[in-house]
Image 1 (cartoon, rainbow, N blue to C red):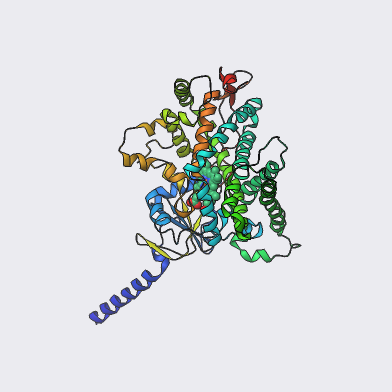
Image 2: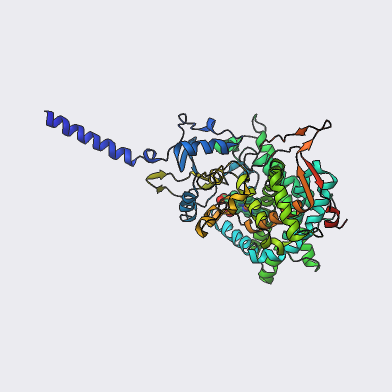
Length: 505
Ligand code: HEM
C-alpha cells in the first residue's frame, strides 16, 4: 500500500511539475506581485518612475516583469541583457505597442517613433539613417555653428526664459537641416506650428507616459462623442488636425521652393533629388513623415539635455571652472569653439559623457513590443509584452560608475583598457537599443557638444542670489514621465568678461 501510495504521489508530483513547467507564468521573470486582473497598475507611479525601476532592479535582478491588465511590462536593467534581446533578437523585439490614443486617434502612426515594425517603418528608417550618418552630418557643421551666437544672445537678453531659447534653438536648427527653412523672426509660421505640436506631443499626448485609459480598455474608442467620458475623443480630433498641419506646412513650403528653384540643400531636397522624376506618392509620404518625425523627436530630447547640463553646472561649479580653463587655454578668448577644437578638449569630452550619463534623458527609452513568445535565461517572456531598456539603471551601475548618483566627469578620464572604455561610454545606452535605436544620435551628440562648449566659453551659469545676498538652491523637480527634463529652476546666467568679443557684439 505504501508503495502504491508513494507511486501515486510521484505521478501526481510529475503531473504538477509538467503542467507547471508548461504554464508560461511559471517562468516569468521576477517582479513585484500585482493585484488579480489589474496587475501592477498602482506600482506605476508616473512621477520619476525610474526611481521605482531602480529599486526593483536591486530587488529582483537584471530582468523585472510586471503586468497591467494582463499585458506584460518587462524592464531590462542591464546593458548586456538589452543587447542580447533587443540587438541580437531584433527581428522579434522591434515592434512598438499599439497605442490607440497616440497612434490611432491622434494620427501618430505616421510618425516613425510610433510605427510598428512594418514596411513603412523600414522604408522611413532607411531614409533617416542615410541622412544622419557622421559623414553626412559634417555638412551640417556650418549650420550648427551659425545658430550658436543667436542662441547665446537670446539667452543673455532674457535668461529666465532659457527653456524657450533652447526650444527655439533646436526648432530653428531642425527646420533648417530638414526643410532648408530659415527662421527669421519669432513669428515664423512653421516654427509656431512646430512648437505648438511638439508641446502637444510631449506634454499632452505623451505627458502621462503615452498610456491612456482607451489604450488599456480599447473598446472605449467606440464611445459616442456625446457620451460622458468621451473628452479624450474630442481632444484627439483637435490634436490630429494639429499634427497633420505640422507635417504638411513646412513640407509644402519646401516643395514650392523646389518648384521655383530656391530650395536649399537639406534632408528633404537630398532625398527628393535622389528619387528623381520617378518619385512616387509613397516616396513623398515617407520623406514628408520621416522629416516630421525628426522634428518631433529632436525637440524635447535637446531641451532635456541642455537644461540638465545647466543644472549640472549650477550644482557643480568646480566642473564649470575646470572646463572653462580648458577652453580658454585651447581655444583662447577671441572666438567661440568649433568642431576642429574638439579633439583638443578632452575634459569637455568627459563633461559631455557625464551629462548624458547623469541625465539619462529618456530614462527607460521607448517601449519595444515583443512579437513572439521568447525564452531567455530560463525565463519565459510572453508575446505582446512591452519591453523597456532601463537606461537609468544602466547609467547608475555602481560597478561601472562608482558613486553613480554624483556628477563626476573625471570618471571618464580614469585609465582603463580599450574594452572598458568602450563599455562605460554612456552613448551605448542613452540612445536606446537594437533596430529602434535613436537614428539622430550622431546629430544630437555633435550639436550638444557644440552648444554646451560654446555656453561654457561665453557664460557663467551658477546659483542665483536673492536681494539680500542669500544663495538660492535650485529646486529640482521632474514632471515629465518620458523625458527626464528638470522643471524650470532659478539660476544666474551672465556673460564672462570676454563674451562680447566671442559673440561679435
Ligand atoms: C540627446 C538627444 C537625444 C536622445 C537622448 C535621444 C534618445 C532616444 C531614445 C532613447 C530613443 C528610443 C530608442 C529605443 O526605442 O530603443 C530615441 C528614438 C528616436 N530618436 Fe532620439 N534622441 C535624441 C535626439 C534625437 C534627434 C536630434 C533626432 C532626429 C534628428 C532623433 C530621432 C529619433 C527618432 C526618429 C526615434 C524613433 C526611432 C524608432 O522608433 O525607430 N533623436 N531617441
